[in-house]
Length: 276
Image (cartoon, rainbow, N blue to C red; front, side, top):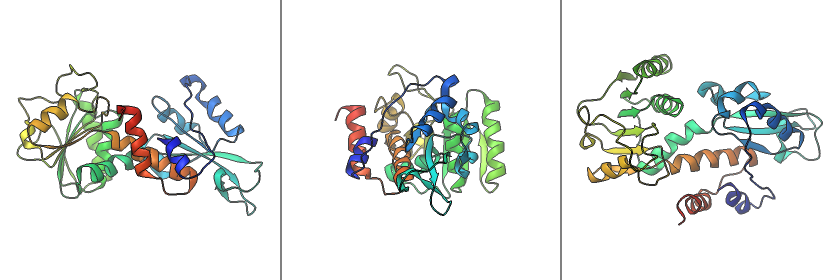
């Protein structure tokens, strides 16, 4: 996806994968900075650890408590921090700048892939771990009318609910399943990664016929048991491939200062993940 995007933009860059042990993360970031990398993406378990390892941090990364994108910057002639991609000549001083592109990617994917404007809607989020917390907080930011949180460990859902009430006091947050129709069910649990997995909700407490749309953050397999059941129930459905696409596109824009070629990146991503 990233290499396809970089090629389309005519950038003489390469995107490579490196396996780094958490104990070596600080050394890896320092090494990338020393070698004048343009930037880095980080995945679990590095996102939270990196918060304390970058030289500067953007508000979104502070807000979500995780860094998934690093941009390396140097000082220009006027002493301003500038992305290395824009810097003419070499800079003696370089810093790492941490960003989070995950949260924005969730709501962008919901908008693009399910055509939903979240304001005033009723939403059920399954899972209150890292992904569920970020999704719930970001969805609440869009001023939904009601947000229902369900998690295996209820205390974790209550923790997220308290955080939402502080940040978005106008949103009604409830623990447990909704009654009546909802506009969106979002699965942020890991149930569905295996084809034999059970559905990620209690079928005695909730029915898919209540949901207009169902979004599963899992993108491999392309159709999880939840999405298969939701399609059979007549719901509009989407998996999480769009979320992966949009967080990567935003990262490329942060590094290059240019608009990411979404169509090219989507095609490369789907080819890689699904083989078509």
